[in-house]
Structure formats: structure tokens, C-alpha cells
Length: 123
Ligand SMILES: [Zn+2]
Image 1 (cartoon, rainbow, N blue to C red):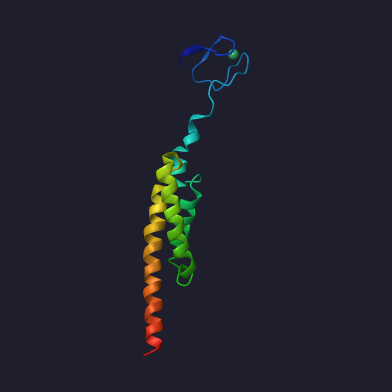
Image 2 (cartoon, rainbow, N blue to C red):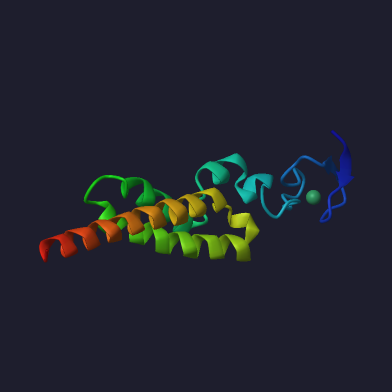
């Protein structure tokens, strides 16, 4: 632990202190955990689209639900991925990709299934 002068009152304060104990000046704008760290990687709460995409794609694996959830996961995955590429600190790359790929596969699967059902009916 080292000391530094407070930018406000110039008294010696810890470099680890979030605020000056003498005058209360905030030496750090935000706590270091602002980028979300591990939590944001596991649950990218700042990238809602990626999170929604992930859960849509996962629950889209449930027969029947996928018809609505898989395309939603695919679309949200695209939005999540775009957001992640524009703002790298929002994270959620893995979630967006899972939503995109899984949602895409399930959507194609349902499209094929519907196609077979429709064409089979007219035979
Ligand atoms: Zn101070």
C-alpha cells in the first residue's frame, strides 16, 4: 500500500482508498469492478440482447417453444453480437454466438419440419 496526495486537500491518502478520509473527495470515479469482471462474462447483464438470445436459443430446444423462441434467439443474437463488436466492454460474445448459432440451427430445423409437413399433406 502506498500513499498519494489527495487531489482536493493535498493530505496523504492511500492509493487504494476510494475517497479521501479527510475531505471525502472521490479519488476514483468508479470502482474497478465497473467492467463487470467475471460476473459480466458469465451473465452479460449489460448486453441484454445477447442474454435474451442465449435463453431464447436454450429454451428454443424445448419442442414447440422453439418455433417462436429460436427465431427470437437468432435475431437477438445478431443484435447482441453487433452491440458486443461496437462496445467490447459490454461482453456477452459467447451468449450472442450461442443464441445466433443455436437459434439459427433450431430455426432451420423447424423450417425443414414445417416444409416436410406442408409438402407431406399435399401428397
Ligand atoms: Zn482530501
